[in-house]
Length: 261
Ligand SMILES: [Zn+2]
Image 1 (cartoon, rainbow, N blue to C red):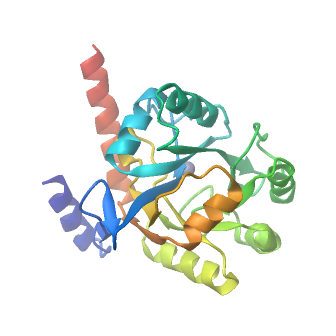
Image 2: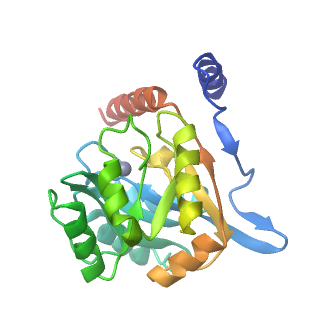
């Protein structure tokens, strides 16, 4: 019902349908190969604008076959290591991979660092942010880089300056103002032969895994393993109109408060 309403509103607004390409089952086998989903952009309770309890994430990852998740809280680092610890305590680290990341606010918009070891301060120039990520052995990912309505996207001039340092381009973000901007990101990545990724940009538990790269199952512990998984994968996801996503988030927050009381 909710999805029908969303499709209806989407049509009214001239947006593409909600599902760009979807999978039916939680664990999907393609030609005898077990595949998994990789989501490289998500938020937890560590972010100021998100309440997703970290302890709830491993169960949701299993349920949605999101076997690789990058935690990319706004200017915060501790969510990733905390999730890693919980996954290990549950004995799930042979099934789930957690990448410690951060969505860093630079002086000219946001950039994501993956495989970080410590927090990167906000407010550095894009160049210095890239240097910090590299110094930690991490990967630089350009997320929602081409949507002019994304207030915090990396400015086009900055994107041009650091283009050679970008390792991964997010070509599917579930929260763009129009799916068209994902296509622009895709073309930009293809021109440079850069690996493409998907990010749910989830700010609620149930949005985690809404955008994904489908790829053969493997554990992802290193940047090289991630790049290999992305290169073998296909990008897909559910695109949600941001106004609808915001309303849904508020609704869920409200509901969870009622349940707690
Ligand atoms: Zn984000």
